[in-house]
Image (cartoon, rainbow, N blue to C red; front, side, top):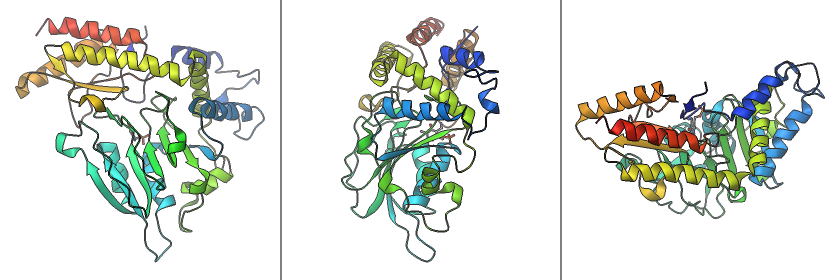
Length: 367
Ligand code: PMP
């Protein structure tokens, strides 16, 4: 029996994709091989790789002056690669400025890493209210190398309601937990990046979408594998890419295209999120800690209204345990913030959200 999996990542994948991958496991496209066994440079693998990139370009509307790279190291390696390639100086020369907006753990990890290679400034933060809102975006210094935001904050469940205008300063965003969840104007960004393990496929692949003029600025001392120019020149095949993950991403993108693409999934995502937020608004025992205008469509943290710490902890532990027993799994909040969290990525059907609400209502009866 399949469970409803509310994991923040790695997360649920569409059942059709898993079934197709299972069917093709030992013989893909009549090649007599699994994708796992193919050389990344073979004629058998080439169309699989090219189809994945073409589908991503089509679904996201990626303009032709952007390169798409399939890399490894997770979104976390991008925390290092971005400042290394765009702001680090040659040996003995000055680092460039980089602006980071602090909207939570991942944004902070990105800026901490960047501080090793860039002159980092953090002109806005939502730390004062436990990151439960997105702060106003201050204007960028015109001499900054780039301006970094985390579009959807997986742990606290916030998202930027509008894209800040950074003028001539390239805007960079971590879109790990919201890629392909709703339409995004790629042309507003200099660089976008996402770990695959939420809306795209299995962990192990990182997608980087980079405007061509931002390629080729790494100082000479940058390790080869961390340079965008080398990955772009070699079309993600400087070394062996995560071949099987890229294949699964292709199947997920095909699934999304057959559903009707990003605008259709966005409608479904809004419907799912609205349903759950409405439930929380009317619940006597649970609430969303996030300010309304900043609420995520993908990650919905919720906490007991109970204020006594011990009773609260008891409710949380029991909720997660009993939900798990009812086939609604991975609902614990992030270890740093506690509470509960329902991650409802593209592959979560509305029936999963309805089942969660039905469970929560029944659970409330026991309080
Ligand atoms: N950024 C965001 C927004 C995330 O949600 C995560 C992981 N959950 C990361 C970065 C880190 O990603 P990875 O584990 O792929 O390095």
